[in-house]
Length: 266
Length: 281
Ligand SMILES: Nc1ncnc2c1ncn2[C@@H]1O[C@H](COP(=O)(O)OP(=O)(O)OP(=O)(O)O)[C@@H](O)[C@H]1O
Ligand SMILES: [Mg+2]
Image 1: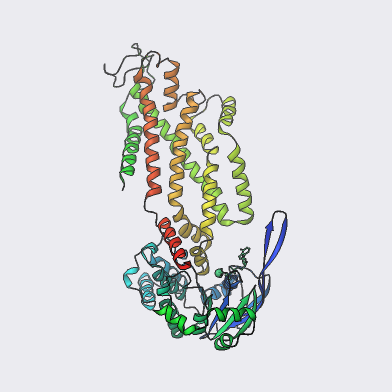
Image 2 (image 1 turned 90 degrees about the horizontal axis):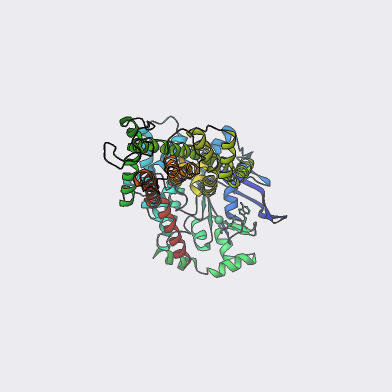
């Protein structure tokens, strides 16, 4: 896979209030392209539809209208092409406490996607891959046998990143990957993501509230407001020369990205 | 292993061994003799009934009978409540609606009138029939509990992550969801067993129980009929009563410990909550 394109995507939810049903347009005519080696930041306030876009990409929701194209071909929800798609597009969830199964070991979480991706691997080969994945996210090998509750939030998020890398994806969707982590470890996790992105030449959709990290870690910034993209451009352009009033408000709220980053890194 | 769990397992274990092995070692519990209402000793460990039957032999058979009821009802409840609770919630949509409607209907069918109805149609109820009736009238409550919990587990991120990685649906249900339900399932089953044994004892005491078989309830029923209390024949009614109380207490202790046994999910949830707060502040 080289290019993943979302085209004129609309997602409406039906809400039932007593007898009336109303429609909520969570995603409103959104189009963008994810290419290998590039990071797009998706910025917007709570409820603006960021996670819904992630779910649409992950096939966890079906579009109301619009399409997702893989190298120009429509994405499939069933069959062999769908399986290939699911391996090529992976996701890191927001909450590291909810995204790992409390019943299973770290090893299980990594071995399953490896086995699914390489059904021909022997046990030893799978174990070797699991250890390699742990090393890649800078975790000690003896975490293999541990349960999620024995890990810190940052360590859990590293495991979640390793799991996403297991099927050797081309595209990574990171839905607010550090918003639930302690401020002191956020930068470490973001730097890890950036390093892995360069090493694997991943296309990354980085969903965040934080304009400062969006500018630092992304090539492009897309600003979402009530489900619609109100601004889309290179990171510096959007921050230094915001057009839409919502972006201006955001940019004013975080006037000095450098200082903000310094705060994060202290 | 906590003290509670050890005590519970110990008492329940002794009673189970007695119910399994006891009947093999004692004589026929129905043999009528010419020495009515003799106290403990005199060749009979727990004395005799009004008609000279060996109380100890009866207790052994009654323990086996009550345990059979408990096990059968526990197993049937597990089967029915997981099918209608877990599978419905996991499949979702139309199946979930239908299953939970059925569960709710079963929930409001009162057990006692149903048993009275059945007993008026079937004159000779076997122990199995009583167990089946108790199971049918009691699984719905735990099905609802299981459904609620399955719904919440089903939408957790780790289940979504498993779906994303391309796991098969049955594997998600059995490997990712079910293990997290095991403590809940275990406590539901233990509760069902307590309910069944107490329920059967109640039915038998009212004369609605299984005919021709021994359970703790039927022993109490015959003791009551034989005026054991008024004649001061404590050795007749005290053993089955104590057995019910002890077994119920033991299972309750086990149930409490299941809740307390280090449940990593509960731990991580509280920590997640704490973390959320610290990020917001
Ligand atoms: N399953 C659903 N049914 C109905 N409405 C939904 C559903 N999922 C999301 N929504 C609504 O869609 C809108 C967008 O939600 P979404 O989760 O995408 O927001 P978000 O940008 O990710 O917010 P946050 O930053 O808080 O994570 C919200 O108004 C939400 O209430
Ligand atoms: Mg979100």
